[in-house]
Length: 152
Image (cartoon, rainbow, N blue to C red; front, side):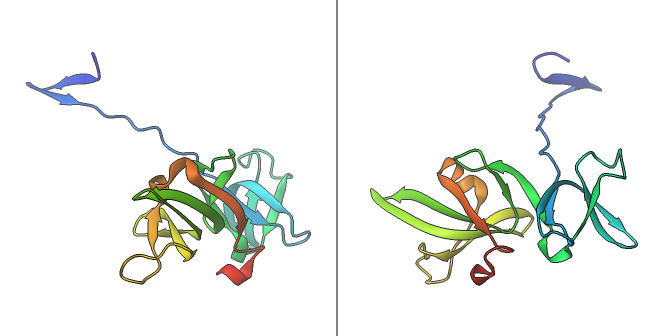
């Protein structure tokens, strides 16, 4: 392989490599209500999150299924990981006008998206949805649906 190209038969094909995002979850412990982060397992006794990939099954937590959220692979402007169910505020400029809003992170149409519930409204007067990459660094995590149920 040379310069990102490989020869297959008599034709050259460009190979494009995409770094895969980290797959992990968070959820609240059923016994203490604390957030734990790691790998999600489905056991006969309930959902479990381990922080060590299941290498030491003595180190696991049973999780409330209603609180399980998947990591999007993205971080907000402050470096905080963004999970499905997070509440974010965003800001961008359109025609030299500053537009701000709040949204919840959802997984729809095969992508993690921001579902706006405060602020930005499309011309159609429906609440807007954007992919997370749409705003990039102008997104800030300010809460989540489990801790702030009034937003869902």
